[in-house]
Amino acid sequence: MPFCPKCHYEYVSGIVTCPDCNVPLVDKLAEERKSDPAEEEYVELHPLPGHIYAEMVKEALERADIPCILIPDMISTGLQVKGTAVPGNQMRLRVLKKDAARAEEILHTMMDHI
Ligand SMILES: [Zn+2]
View 1: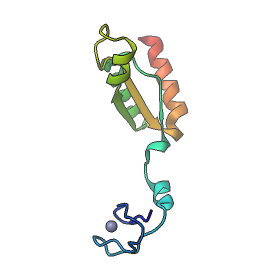
View 2 (view 1 turned 90 degrees about the horizontal axis):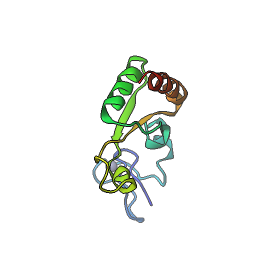
View 3 (view 1 turned 120 degrees about the horizontal axis):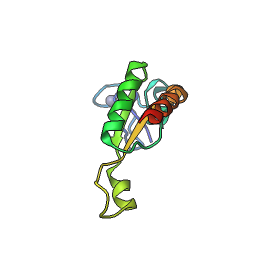
View 4 (view 1 turned 135 degrees about the horizontal axis):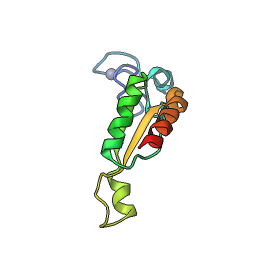
């Protein structure tokens, strides 16, 4: 499938230029993916047992210059313990792969004190 290298829009085969950007389409967006903070560059840390802990860890990570994303784990929590758990109780934390080891360390240190 051809892609536009500029707007990343996917076109059907046969189209050779992006009508929006007026640039030739490419087969793959491999090059762009490398420089993009794409999802595969993120790794997931331990699920955290609650929103408050998650926020605390997030703050600590940000203080250590580790960018992170908090994801509420509503669906799987709901499925695991149907009817008994508060939905969204568990939080997942994503950090960049290169920061993962450092983030885990901070996380463990913090969990020891909680
Ligand atoms: Zn385009």
